[in-house]
Length: 248
Image (cartoon, rainbow, N blue to C red; front, side, top):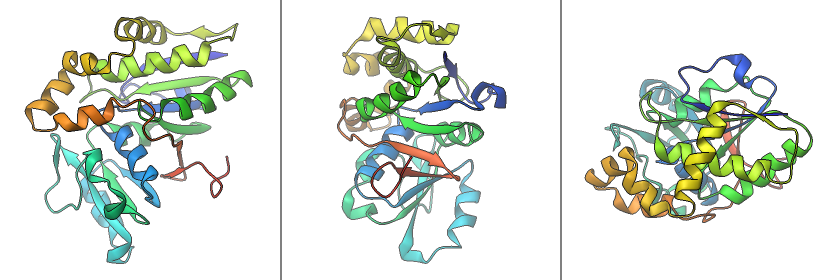
């Protein structure tokens, strides 16, 4: 079976993901925020490429049913209810709501992999839960693709290291796995940082940018391994939590 890591959505083709189980990673912060939102009771998260698309879709809901959410240049979009800080997604704010969500990188990556057989949203905060699902698929000889969303069409260190952690977990105890160069590179970077996620975010340029913008507390949350053990599944253009009401 194949286990590949791709960097960013802009270079992906349908052949890269078709028929595969795909994990989309945007540690800082979209995939973390999605996991937190679903863990705190959001009904669903619907990703959009643009703010305009999210606003248009909101007109099909009653006002109390949804939250407009997202960021541009790391800051909340004017007129939206929530930004992309996972700390905003408290149970009081979003329980039972549909989150209409648009971000610079993460939602674009999700939309780019719609032709996959199955799409999961991964991060550090839900690492063990998601990696267990992907390992099960790998044991069944399904091909796996991990998409590290990156930052504005550039590779990001934190997404690459997180992808490497998934690669390490998926391949453990399995033989006859073919990996692309991206998977090998991610694995090597993950070995460098190991479990020192605070150091990773200090070294990562996007981590420094978020700190300078006043979101240092977000980094601490994003570095909390397995804090929100949910499995977000992207299907039919929406992300919902795998569980009793959402069979695979």
